[in-house]
Length: 125
Image 1: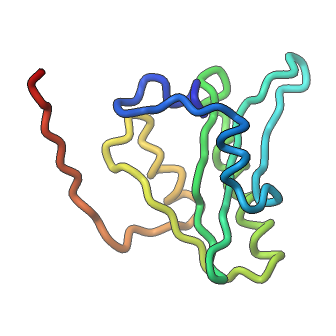
Image 2: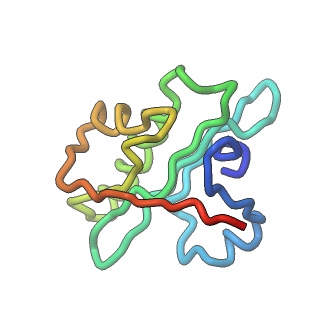
């Protein structure tokens, strides 16, 4: 995740163990590996909250983008939570995401229900 978001404003570096310690259930975390290099190519996590699913995280490393990996990972995550009895999944994303992630979400069937404006103010030193 750190590498995937390194060029995003406001991204924070997070250590794996810190992230893993905060997770209640890693069974809904799906990872794609490059068999030739042994590198992690991308990952997705769909969280379960009060019987509903939430697409919490999708990230694909730059060398693996544009190949349909994000879509495959999302579908894998959605199928896994459907098998657990989840009938609805939501997500939140930034409309101004440089990779235009919303496009892949719409391709797998997500639809915009609400838009929330985001405000920022640069602070002088």
